[in-house]
Length: 400
Image (cartoon, rainbow, N blue to C red; front, side, top):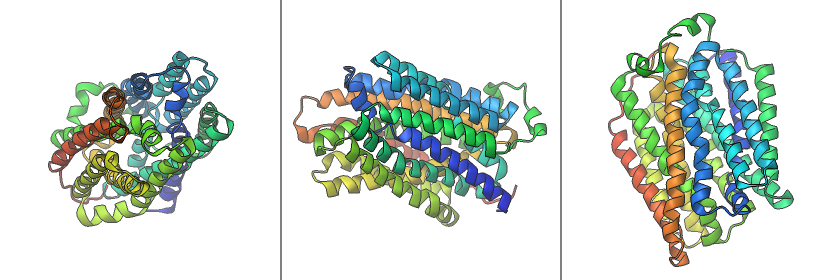
């Protein structure tokens, strides 16, 4: 990999890192912030999920726009929209205003798929999963600094403070993209397939069987993970007595594991075992962590279960994205990866809403059984990905 390519990957890494820090600051505090306005667990699930439902609609559109007009303007548009959504939530005085902010944020939330397309533009097929792992590492670092920062600022300055921090970081991110990130998609490639519709056109530009399998696997992975995410802060608060700051630090630990795996190990593992086998092993780790978390009585058991969750997710996400990108023609990378992220967005809507609903079944149970229903449902969903992973293609290395 030449120096110019490394520099551009570094800028993408940094912009996604800032984006994910902004995203991560709200995770440990959003349920408690919503409870200030009388939100029920069901409504909190919708608050998490509505962002992703809107993103599900807009992510393919933003991917198509990035294929037509370039990656850079779409990334700028996305980060400006994210800033607007966070500021509206920060200034909001009603639950309805929180929903408005989440909707606006979701409309502009296609930056990850576009960033993946940017990576695909500048890397060869054999480098792709390793490069996607850098995006995963940015996610991990975001989950180190974001939740910890969110928990600390909420404890020190109130629940709205993390939202203003996230909005400010999104503004900084948009400026950095404008100043330092060059366009990755040449003009001649933007013209290719410009007038071809996403459906059914994409089916002519992908390896159908492998691509559909990856999309289905990714959907179930994100759905199961999101069931857990929506109830996690309430789970550790009720079962382990964690406040926002402690919850943020716990998420930071998950981020550390994500950085170690996706930033350093994933390339070596993929090179030795192949993407499909790494994803399969990740699914089993994730199932074990989700199943074991509500059974943990002490801090040690909780940390072990969380480590399994972080490890499994870190092994699956970049390898699935890498396989998807290798099943697609070059000119359709933005649309295909945008569609993959759109499936993930739909899963992030279904998962939190289901998680909030499933949590209501545990509200009148003994405290030792609090949140056992959503966690075990999440484990069952992710177990299905194990069987799909067995069908993933073993793709040979090749040059671009």
